[in-house]
Image 1: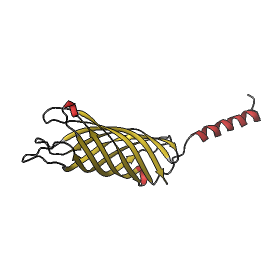
Image 2: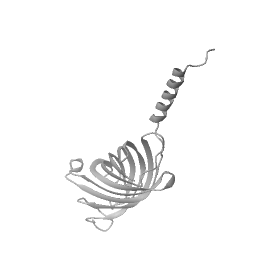
Image 3: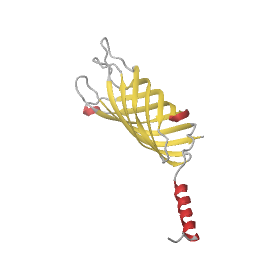
Image 4: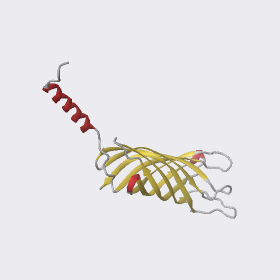
Length: 193
């Protein structure tokens, strides 16, 4: 068997260097990520039945990075629906949630994450019956759990390709005082190092 020529060795080295250059090192995470996102919220309206409807809105969140993929998230979102199910009823919600997030850092541009957030909800422009009377603009407990995927576009910019959360609010409704929501959305992530 003939030993490889210098050209073959050089070509093999170039291919190896090219393949190595295309892999991304696990970069240190941004110390702060700020996300602006659109959100759609599928929620139930009536006690004892679905009466489900969609709300549209947006949110802003800040994620401060901690070691080993962990982070702390603060999120404020607002959503609104008008003329719900043709009943000429409206509903507006503002949520303010905080909690931990875990992001799986890997060698690709794709960073999946999972989170659990707890906080509150402020409701307006709707009917909120309680056992004694109707409350005009109630505040209540809320929590959300879910996750999503960020796709890196550059060092300072990423695309929130998808996010899906189960959100529970506990607004007065003359029944269980519980509403179950499915929130989905997408947006843009700004990274600061």
